[in-house]
Image (cartoon, rainbow over all chains, first blue to last red):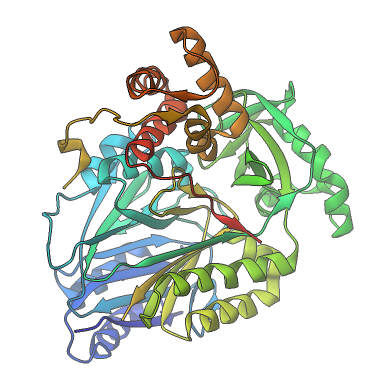
Length: 393
Length: 94
């Protein structure tokens, strides 16, 4: 039996959710539902939407998070929710939620990761991870998940968004909804799923050294307040786009921080992008994961074409990694910066991504960070990246 | 199924110092990874370049993984990757 995937998007929130979920169940053509995934704007209260999902799908694992934009293969926008369901018996899932992510990520993960017995009929393992980026330990959580699950388990997922408020990002498992939390769904499958990853930023500044940092907060770069250094580096580039970075109100700075992110120099011409999420006291910058003192970074920027080609590239990689297996559908974790940079062209980027997968059902959301650890990768939290998790038929 | 239930396994193959740095660089940056590994090698009295025998690599990792926060975590994952003989993979950029 192959895997069937169905998706739908609604702008009417919980009011339409029961009908939408019932319709999705029908579209599985009699196959048993195995996993439900929901990506919801903060304008669609997550508790209410997940109550409807549970009413329709019962004990089928259902995971969700809030977003900064959501899409399926035909529709994209904000203020709505997108639902995705997989059916068949090639893939089975078990999901949990762990709280207290900021204080103890390992304990939160151990609460979220259910002890799933080995299944000889489904030997391939993939974990979908959704987390609250405002807990400030995205990379730490991805690395810990890898150590707890084992290096033979692929990871894919994203950091919840909150429509650019940077105040309250939620994750959910069943009807349990929380911030400062992590959700892990462990998928066991007959055939391996595939992950495609590609980012689209390039260095803008010279190398800079993080001279004072604590956890996810960078206080100083090259001995000066981090935010001041960031503004110095982006001022001219922002001016070319008609933005006077020194006059941007504090409440609007978030979108600009996400356009000019920080690249951790990981090797020759190799950057691990880190998104600054907010400006703190004393001109500090808070990130979604730790950046240690002594790290050397460059401020980066992206051009529009790179944002489109990187999304297409991630999808193409995921499809290619499935070999001759046709694609049943996909989940997409796509950095919010792409939506901000592309504006009205974002719809085209999603269309190109969908075409690259073969125009199959997909659901995705605009994230504050992406998670991808394929076999052999030793770092898992990304920014400005598109992560595509593809399911074979 | 979870690795938390499995005992820590020792390394059985020699490990290139550059491989350890490459595995850690994705999380903490190349420069920081070099400093961390270099300081640990110096403290242990090991050569600061080349290939370490498995027993020495185990001691190096034992030193690194006790460090706080992301540095210690990056060391844990790097050791896992090295033990499974996986080469460092990097996400592609446009």
